[in-house]
Length: 313
Ligand code: DHB
Image (tube, rainbow, N blue to C red; front, side):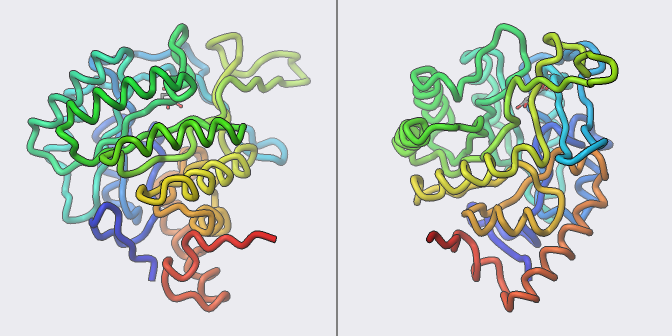
């Protein structure tokens, strides 16, 4: 069985979308609700609606291996009230819903958290500390003092209710240590989602001798095969360092194989971005079947049989 629990909520399986993919408008959210995902999350929102960056702003890299995507969407979204209204009519009996917020300022984040606290919604709050694509806005997850300040204010503003943070990838052991130490000072930060895209990559087409997305001279966030080992490192680094928190794995998952690796590294839930963008919500049916088949071949009956049980040499 793929059944699991997250913050004491039962889920039919650990698979869900990555924020940003198939979750910007109600029709997409309804398709996720009807899919076989175990949970779902809304597009990261700002206080006010945004059009985002000029197009083309997402490209799949499918001509060759490795496979992946680059994006610089720039937070196009319908604005916080739209997603708040969706949380108030979501069918929570069918699956849990996360709401992702990505305020442009600390005050905007606090305003959204304040409305959510008073709203009658069981949606789970994921605060995005890692959007790499808004020109002039640094990723909070890479500014440890700013991250600490935000967590202090947001956790207090949310009345110590449970919430989580979406982190950027880290690449240095000292950064894993420092980020985890900060997060561990906030017990109401009940989960961390690792990772957001590898920010500000540059994909170049040799034929056209050009970048392939328009915003930011072609710089954008990388997803897909390229990011899987970085994602697994971040999942496992935070799983080891934050024993009181759950870890949600995100990055490079396109089949049961990568989902299994994320869970083995310590992920309780597993998100899909690029692969969901390309394949659509039917992907959950396929990946569920593949994960169950891998478990059967290995003689595992439940996720707990291998969750976090990564071996070292
Ligand atoms: C966008 C991209 C991200 O990686 C993110 O976390 C939030 C928003 C975007 O460009 O829209």
